[in-house]
Image 1 (tube, rainbow over the protein chains, first blue to last red):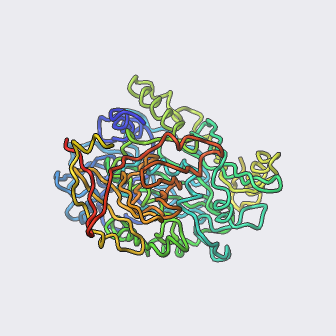
Image 2 (image 1 turned 30 degrees about the vertical axis):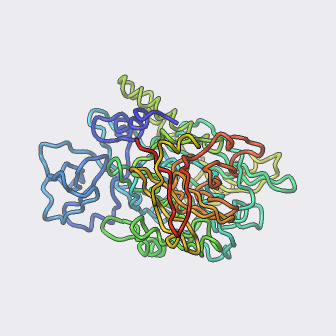
Image 3 (image 1 turned 120 degrees about the vertical axis):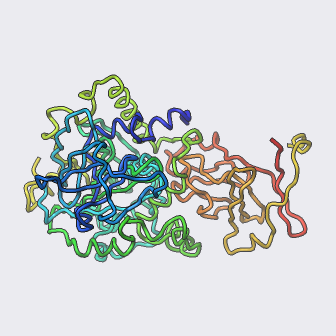
Length: 408
Length: 121
């Protein structure tokens, strides 16, 4: 449990807030490149600010303040012709990277360099970007991504699908090193031993599920400071996902799916996801207003939640069900929440550094940032004695076999 | 509990028919607070806080099984008194669950009506 004051401090992100000041020290995804088709001005609602993308006189893409009124919906998305730029308001730099438009909202500081993450290094053909709206605070959205235990419950399938039908879906592949679908490993070994290591980008989170015959399932996921995770999706692909605040009670997930093998089938990936979302706000069709299509009979027979097979919907239900801003004065964290505890400690340290004007003390704000590569994100089944080496080896092999230069 | 009867008032919160569902679990709001009402395998009623005391997930979508309600987020299991009886993601042998209890309100059922013992503020 934490105090109400502490909860406000780490969740609220508008101009002048503590956590908002930390997030403003980093490049964050603000829109998808696809949204530029909206017109000569594209609305962006980010960190409690009402903004719009447009090209200036020199043809440079910029993010500027737009004229808005206080009654607007948090995801208000006006037509291009109705957008008026507020020339008094701040203007922010943007970068288009692999289908996502990143923005830097730190008004008084120089933007940091970007780390050399796999999703930024891979060629356009091997990265697919998409986003989706969640109606809750960004921090609870991020925290579910650094909680390796929940996959054994929330995403439990009471029966396993044929992994051959698994393209573009999470947890449906077989693990490397064993002929067991990951869904079965997660179901049979629900209490992982979780290790958290401090890294130059944030946290490396290793979940060990000790199985029979001296074998261990090793799943490595990562927290990339301040608002992203990097996790394996299949043997071919990883997910790098930001949780970006629209305002205090609404956020977008932005995901860059990165392939280490074949070019990404972007048409299929986009079609799969557009079927579940409505444009232009990318709001999910399954949501609180329709109980996420909850089916008690399915919950009894097929899935742990009764909300279908899309794990994104499970996550959305879990985090939206906590309320607009999770009331952490009532929570009871356990051993399985060790990465969440470590992350909050880093966030509070960053808040203090920013408050004291020492931005260079923040993670990923120094000259070495372009040298940050990876991170390692994979699922393997290994000899228990040798798990660390085998996880590392699987990453090295995947990188060596990759058609683009993924070496680190 | 007996002494608190003096300050509490039995208030009808639902009818038995409303719980006559294949999965007898419904949300209840009392004095602005959110609860979940369910019938366990023994046919007894439980009226407990709606948000899981772990990370706040919504117990109205929990799994009604093993004579209680199981949170769909990490499998924490609660009996009708609100006591946490299982935390399957915690290390084997952990006794953390014995310290965890969700707010519980006494309920009784008669003549097709379900009443809760509501305390005046």
